[in-house]
Amino acid sequence: KAGVTQTPRYLIKTRGQQVTLSCSPISGHRSVSWYQQTPGQGLQFLFEYFSETQRNKGNFPGRFSGRQFSNSRSEMNVSTLELGDSALYLCASSTGTGGFAGELFFGEGSRLTVL
Amino acid sequence: GEDVEQSLFLSVREGDSSVINCTYTDSSSTYLYWYKQEPGAGLQLLTYIFSNMDMKQDQRLTVLLNKKDKHLSLRIADTQTGDSAIYFCASRAGGYNKLIFGAGTRLAVHP
Image 1 (tube, chains in turn cyan, brown):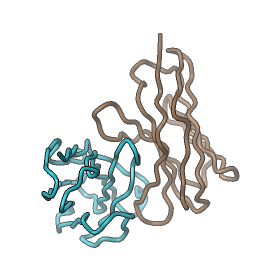
Image 2 (spheres, each protein chain N blue to C red):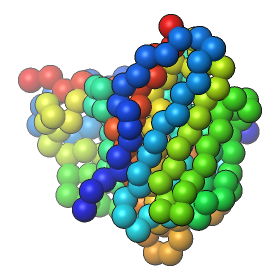
Image 3 (tube, rainbow over the protein chains, first blue to last red):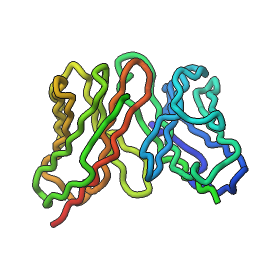
Image 4 (cartoon, chains in turn blue, red):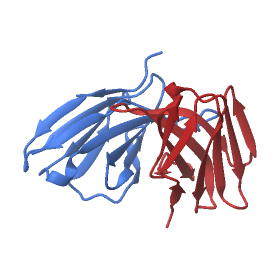
């Protein structure tokens, strides 16, 4: 079955703009979590959504937000972009419950460059 | 706070075994993961282990967990050039999908 799909794969924005990234989880998965990967800070948890509700949030400013739709697809938004927001944004998909709850699969990421 | 540490670099000869080590601080970790990342790609789930297990084997991969010392290792048997990548250790606590990642170990395989 299809894996985790993230769009767009690459994008370039300028400071002050906003950006929306999309993630389609594996079919049947209800949990979507987002991570930011940078050379300096490594991989950091942003937030997790399960059945359209945010159930965990990392230590990021309010400019970072997300949502999940009824079909489990998720979007994250970053407003008022700063140079330091340049990163690879990764989405992870999981059933969220049950016997396969341990499996957490990542997409290929969206690489954001802020100029 | 929660922390995961791993050595940054490992070099091995093709055909040898590789052992990548990781330590974590959160004693309530339920799952521990190993991911592989190749240049320009996302994270590939290699294997994971539940905290009540000591060992898990999956083809060339063997994971050992020492819960008392909070130490996790990944052994790759018969290492190939295609295994060259960055390997991330991650811990997960509680029922949510929040992973704490190590900085990654860059594995270089040479002939």
